[in-house]
Image (cartoon, rainbow, N blue to C red):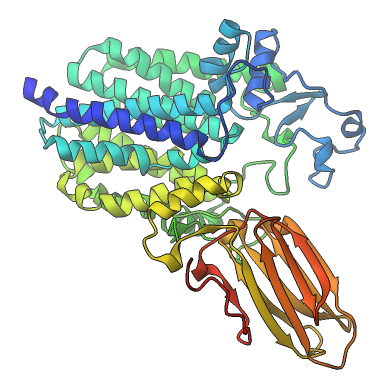
Length: 570
């Protein structure tokens, strides 16, 4: 028995040091330093301030202009008047996100320090301790099955358990959504760890914290209550064990209902009907017609693969998706954790089968719920993917995951680098380029920061009406640059555009001429300004940047004659 316990310990402690170091770096990598000792404006900071002052609403007054609207919840109302994605009810702001993170972290921290807990520190804590509990559940499942895999295999499995379940993506850009999801992950992991501890020891008292954390998961993400309900079904035939788990679970769920009643006069109203948000985001509607599309995107959607670091990117929204369907760029769960193909191993008859069935049914049940809501969002994978990943790792021979570790970590770490909006590239471009250079031995594929660009284009005096031609393009999607030549309304026009959704844009109408146009394009890294001259006369100046691009990402029209488009990679 001592060997069963001893073998994984070194692997566990080694993995813990690596995982914490990585999570701590990841949460700050995009430039979001942890601001200790301040009063902060995060939504959970607002909720903690309200709770410590003795009320449930946020200590932020809605603007009179918003309250004067005939329907302030109308998505067409100017967003500048709103506390976006907050709940407006009875002239007060509330959160529809669960109270769990505030009770577990933000309010206690404010009571102890009289300052706010930074949201990125909270998600670091929830993410890392959630992994610790998930690792405990994994090792407990090995113990249940009396399996003693080689410590190296255990170490690899623990790394996959930390990286391939979506948490690195949450750490990249932290806001109220990510905090609630990470707290739900922590609660489910803690509950499962205590449940497995009970199965190993048959000591009923371990079910008290298991039931409590299953309940607190509801206080973070209400649909996570499915996992707690499944666990209670497992224990139903053992009366004393069932009562030990059901009592704290029921009390916490009742407290959540009371919290809702105090805010909205209805125990099952979480505030989504009164949400100040965009179109199609105010209420949850589960539709059978959403399932096929939801399963495809949440499970199967392939990444966009590029030869340039970090190689894997979330696919953009296709034009064929209905506007009523909420789809953000994402990579399907099977690409983050291809070892999910090993899930049939969890159906085998082993002493760990009861908890493995909870993981399987809970994971697929949550996936079914999310797929039917019409919301395919990368961060929502953290609701179900850790459960399925844990089931696969705890049931399959660990030699197989070890063989898949490279593709698993490659895609998941790349997603952690890019995050939802490539925040590291945009906020810390020098850091991004430095990291990229470590993994870019080919000069043509090595990203550079603000490289000089020189190009010469010759174009006819006029083009057919409606012509749009990309003269020059550079950089990845999040920091993409394009210079376009357009013929619209009888006027030749240059459009210079940089960043997501045209964050920086400049246009210039070209003077009429009967001669061919000679356009000289130069990007000066010293002042990050692109200048276009026509026949020696400046016609457009556009200051933008920082521009991060590899030589291979710089493309131009087929008639470009410049010899300086960085093809040498210097």
